[in-house]
Amino acid sequence: MAMDLWGFKDTRELEKNTSDYPETILKEQISALGEKTGFVLYGKPIYMRIKETEVEYGAATIFNVVVPALDDYNKTLLIMYSNFEGNYPVAISVGKSFAEDMEDFRPQYECKDLDSFKEALKKILSSNEVMEMIKTLYSKANMLVS
Amino acid sequence: MRVIKVLFWNLYNKNLISPLIDLIQENKTDVVTLAEATNLDISALLNHFKLNGEDWKDIQFSSTNDIRVLAKKEVNIIPFKEEKHYSIYKIKKNEYVDCLLIVVHLLSKMNKSNEVQYNRAYNIARELNKYEQELFGGNERRTIVVGDFNMQPYESGICSGYGFNATMSAFHASKKTRKVNGEITYFYYNPMWALMGANKCVQGSYYNSSDKDDNAIYWYSFDSVLLRPYYIEKFNWDYFSIVEKTERYNFVTNTIIDKSRYSDHLPIKFEILGG
Image (cartoon, rainbow over all chains, first blue to last red):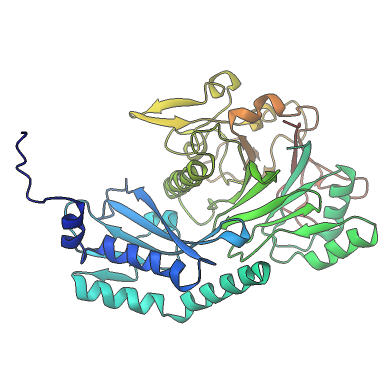
């Protein structure tokens, strides 16, 4: 029998041990959007590698809201910036595109740990700006669905 | 996609409704793509066509930019994404995406350096690549990018392998991809090269006699159309041009663009033959 020298047994164990990681938490919010709206809206991540050396992060996760009733219309809700080597810090940008951020990187939130990340995410997802976007997209989609 | 005639015009933030109507009618346009269009009275435009028995629609969900697209009712076109410097539209045929039409209005040289412009273009090109990947998967990409790039076809933001990778060479573009720094990079074909330097009065879509580097260029092809190789054989060269005038309006007077009465850009038009 082949030797298994890894420090984890299977993906379930891996998932249990990464539940507090920013990518996991963000993914949960992305999934929650679909569940909460009956999939009239749902979230979708898009990954971009950062090539700019002036930006201290290596990866961008673009959180897009998708509207199936509008032929999968996409709207960017936020962008999370992270590094491959560690979980924190992460940065979050709202209201700007990836290209805009790469030119002038000034994210609204920089999170050093889990608590500050959760706090920032909660603030963003319940902000007036984001709620208006969600309500507008939902209302446009619902008009076509019903 | 059936035969489709497209017009692009940067309106210089003016309500150029009458010249636009003439352009659309005289060129039998099917899809109008516009930049700096926030002051255009779109309702009046649509009503005009309705009164003349033509049904046009405003293609927009939630625009945060100055780009607007109008299309004849029979063109099945819907917005996919609307960002600050670009908007992506799906042109559909029988419920599948037949063409991705992307309209851009990129950073101006007046506000930013060349380097900043190019870097912005590189990142926008990368974003657009991601959406193409999502929509076309492993199938051949059927994308057309039109708009005000604010760059000449030979500038890095457009022709670099890190930018739009747009070439003047149909031969090279037809290879579809090349490797740049080890990464597969998709070609665009840029037909605008054919219009530059032609021995006629108008040799670009923008005129400037005070180049900031004292280059003797005068005519700039800032407005471009870029085609994925799929469309090279479907491009109608006889129809393609920079539009200098209509029957009633002359956008060029005394050999320069009349920006006091019209826009500081000339419209461009192109046609894609059915495929």
